[in-house]
Amino acid sequence: PGHLQTPPPPTLVKARLTTELLASIALTGFSIAVAAGYARVFTGWDFFGDLVVLALSGHAFGFVARRLRLPGFVSVPLTVALMVWIIAAVHYRDSMWLLIPTGDTLELFRQEIEAVRQQFRTEVAPVSFEGGWDVLAAIGISLAVALSDAFAFRALAGVEALVPGGALFIF
Image (cartoon, rainbow, N blue to C red):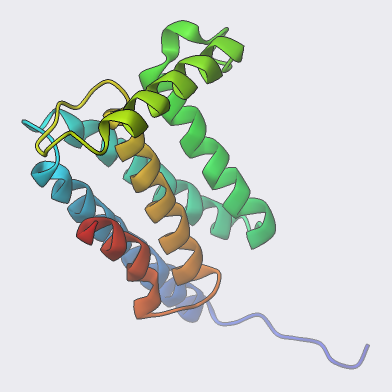
């Protein structure tokens, strides 16, 4: 009582929305560039479409969650859950029940990651975008997208938002 806040003028609201949208687009572009960096890891460009879908989906969901004013402790786990679901739907759709991951989905995931773990010491890039390497790349992009979006728009970090993608690109 006594401290009524007046809403910001519509021009300021529009300017903030435009700035946030442009920043989201720029960060999405950076994530797509990081995905393109996998060209050094995989033979051909079969990987690119799947990773772009993850970058677009993760950043778009982050933008919508911010517009809905979802708190970070809700939106960040939801972003990760969305990315996990997309990875499962793209790579393990046949093992899902009504597009819901099952125990078979988790077992296939475990087997592929184990195969990649065993091959990691001996394989030399470029490798085929299959057999678990595809899922590992998807996990890397998903983590970079979720972290960079959270750093940029939840923690209000500047250049630090580029660290997850930059680290993945270097690796």
